[in-house]
Image 1: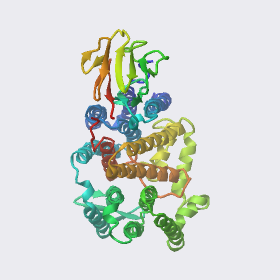
Image 2: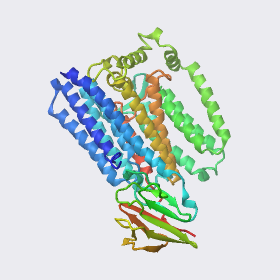
Image 3: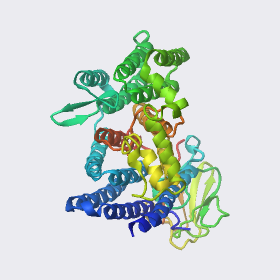
Image 4: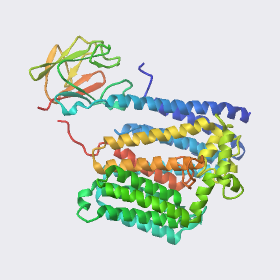
Length: 143
Length: 409
């Protein structure tokens, strides 16, 4: 009885240990993808405020803003976020003469800038917090 | 897509693994079962799961390292329990104390900030630990590295290892302070070599190797003066050759490494038994409780890797190596992300310590490199080893947080 159990369990143990390693490596992989590029030393950028480890999809730590940047769930956006709360085409940030404007593209769950629901478009200033679903970005523009 | 990697999944896998293995072990030990063992086994499950949960709330640093270590120690405790339920019981207690020490050192490193300025204290502490060992030490398994005070015996060298990391972090992060003195680099090297010499007198070759490795690694990364590094490597080479010629116990290690078979009934007994055990295990092992790990001397301590491989298979053995690899990878990542120079070096030193120690002992028992007695961190039986490894892990956890906060705005 014990022998049989022991033989069955040894296979299960190996499977559990490898699944564990696989899951951790996968989480680390997402973490590394998020590290790519470091735009913090050039112009304006969006910085993620959530802890990367807590997010089950691929998001970068920061995104630099040069010209226009669109954000949404579908892959034709500049920033693709596979979160259920993000609409296919969610928002767009445009640059106009050294000033940045954020515009919601009619997303179903909305965009919040400094805890206020964004209607149409608004001008972004340094330190604004942009909230989309559970994700929070801070807009940094140091001139 | 969304739930492919749930953050809680590793924690649940760990719990499942512990539940299954614990119940199998209790079934194996069903004749000598008493309520204390069952209570402690359940206690460990609660403590490990709880500690991981609390940490995910408490720390905004790295959450993987404690998970990885939890898995390693679960594999270790099952094997120790299977070999001897007395030792298993003791190890369970040590693990609970160790997790307490982990949180203790984590809070001390994040809340207190005077660690950088204690350089003379560290040096004094290291030398007094060595003096204590030499005066009060008992000889066990060929090395004087145990002292016992009032019935509690411990290995000071395990603690000195952590102090060494602090000494080196202080020295390399405070270069400007030290460069006032002439030949500061050489003085530092002299101090480290005196440690290694003292370890040699105690015949603790494994720990001497770890000290050398941590020092050389940090020096290679942080020293500006290439001449000092060359001098270190030269001295190390000469010292190694001299040790081989002068000391018999070094020669024996090399001999049994190159060819243990002529000495199978005495000097080569340990290593050949270890190799037999690994071969016996094959891919999936014989199954828990169905092998003969007790044929290997120290099967629960230095040779735990061979025992695990015998009963749980080479795949589990490779799994352990992979767990150590991702632990070391996380350690390097923590060091890269840390802004404070002192804590960065601390993280790097501790990572080097874990990596080297696991490499030296796993390499030793599989006859890849000469065998030196060391514990496999978190897996092997041993109170001081568990305690010092968890203290080191707590420091690493503390260093994974942003300790010098700078505002974005």
